[in-house]
Image (cartoon, rainbow, N blue to C red; front, side, top):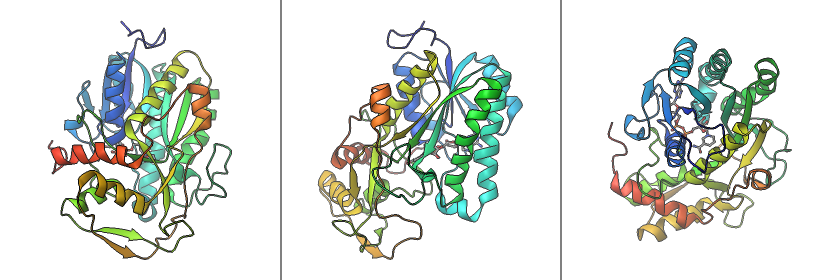
Length: 338
Ligand SMILES: NC(=O)c1ccc[n+]([C@@H]2O[C@H](COP(=O)([O-])OP(=O)(O)OC[C@H]3O[C@@H](n4cnc5c(N)ncnc54)[C@H](O)[C@@H]3O)[C@@H](O)[C@H]2O)c1
């Protein structure tokens, strides 16, 4: 039976594809707390068995269409949240065909399996990387999409395919373009454990804990302190957005695309300051040159999802976001132990 917070008709299970990963695992917890039955489908190429705690884990690859179809059927899946992708910009530049195979072919295989099994609701994880170098900030949904790396192109390819898929198969979708996901489950149940880690907050935390010093790429940007400004959105705020997106689709709402960020830019030095404040430790960092393709300022206009779905981020300040990440890392110094 569905919980009272779930819209009518939303009593089937949700397949969380990529649910052993960072954002997907937090979404699983939010779904379970909303009374949904959760099944995770993940090949564990980047995820963690120990992060799957709110439903069974089916180990499988999204390019295995037959297996996906059999899971959708056997588990009586009503909707899919699709997080599974490779998402390292540098690796995507070195291995574009691998990225197209995993992110584009894999998603097309999922969409075919869903159509074959009559599963017609999809929430798709997209990214700010679809915009490339911004023409203006904050970045709203009308901003031109011109990715500057293969990763962003693979996500945009799926965004562009979805209207065609809807026309042909009737699959409705909500595309969520996240900016920088950050933080950890406030209860300490889940955290961020990418290997290799490329995200600023966990790297700054590890530096404060005695790991390698943080590299700060560029101090001569046209920003107040010379370092890049970015938009950090807390992972549980992201998870909430997925529940709202799912509710829209399951109550018969139309397909939509939303930018999803905190809407308030923070500099690299702001983040370093927040880690120092929360931890009471110094964050050793070394200056480095700018990286190719790093725009000075990137932050989201999330007004559309706020107005249409009633989404509001609960975490606004870097210290609040960092505090959850710090606590999880302190309790899990080696990350997940699978
Ligand atoms: N982390 C961010 O800041 C961020 C920002 C924008 C967009 N995104 C997107 O959000 C999604 C989730 O990001 P994340 O940080 O949680 O990543 P993650 O690497 O932690 O999780 C991705 C999960 O997908 C799985 N996976 C990958 N390829 C697969 C395949 N072929 N078959 C089955 N499982 C597969 C991995 O094992 C992993 O568990 C990704 O699609 C990413 O592109 C992330």
